[in-house]
Length: 189
Image (cartoon, rainbow, N blue to C red; front, side):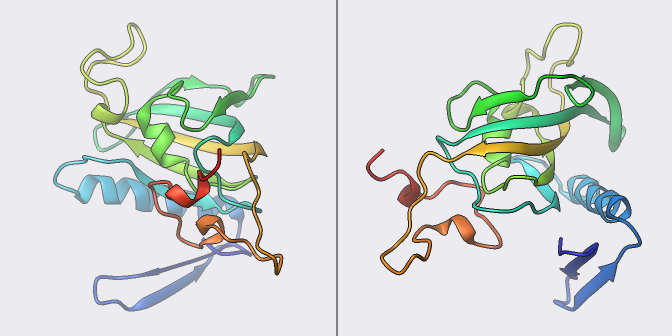
């Protein structure tokens, strides 16, 4: 995902491609379809799949950072989006969470690392990283794969560190954040 509705990617022959879309919505819809295609083409989904839709600004979030999030969650059914089972998009309250606190499903904890304020991301979460064999009575059947579109509206970083030259000294500005938080963001906390 690039500014001005551009998306760049490379194919299995390592050929680079760049597409410019007419609108942000068209670029985001493309990103969602790419993520669904990745899910459908993997033999077994054993970790969280994610696709950035909008990059956002500032530092990427890590464990311990507090976020306010707008989200919608769907069941993944018949190789695509099923019914919505949860959303706060048209509600007054955003979801507040401290990343790494264990208050949300493991797939969210992993899938949101590296997001930035204003960023939107599409997450496809396998059952083992969601509600597993128990599901959620009346809402999420047992062993369900879930899809979420999440948007970080506000961020409160645990610590913003900079070196003597004013440059960031953590991995928090990397363009392709690791799905696993680095330990260098936790020293001294």
